[in-house]
Image 1: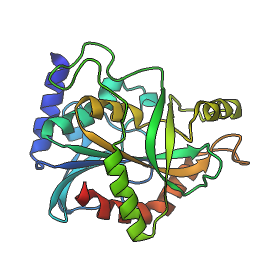
Image 2 (image 1 turned 135 degrees about the vertical axis):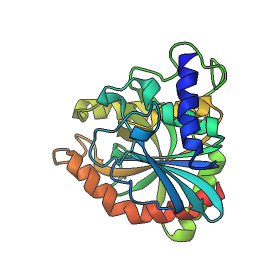
Image 3 (image 1 turned 180 degrees about the horizontal axis):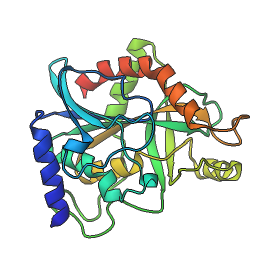
Length: 269
């Protein structure tokens, strides 16, 4: 199957960097928050099949190094469905990490806050998600060597990993909330009417990433943890127009806390 060959080629190229146990994907404006010791890096352009990000704030490289004795992979930047990439390309990195033997995946993203009580700068663990992309990365022939045709999604974001994250955040004095993330296609921001509808559906956060990667990771048997940085209040909640510059600026403002959290958390996963 051609898709399995693409995954294997990417995994073989990444194997030259090492054999990580944990992978971390860094979202908008977060590429610099998580350096590793003895890093070896590859740009996306040097990894067969990897799509290349076209959005500001996404570096487009993979690094493998060590952190407190663990071998860790960090993906700095991601591609999005709205950039025109097929979802098979969007989730190819995750599937390649699974073939490398990665057992736990940490996803980060920038999001808009929908729920009352959320503020720009809040760090929020995802407890669940709503897929509003109109597409699923598992559509088409099932990749039997990767996972089952109908994977269970009862607990996409691992409960035990969330407990560990809360414990680490408490040790560090970092406030860590929880919420449900709704993924939209983008790239336009949502209208106030859409935000009201999403709130009525049970969404606390809204963004344009993460859900395809989480679905692909669970399909492949990986444990998933996701941390969202609320970079702005969503349309109709915020009194100001929304902008990507605000997203990047807020991500960078909270980067230090997110970096401290990841540095203490990832070795315990």
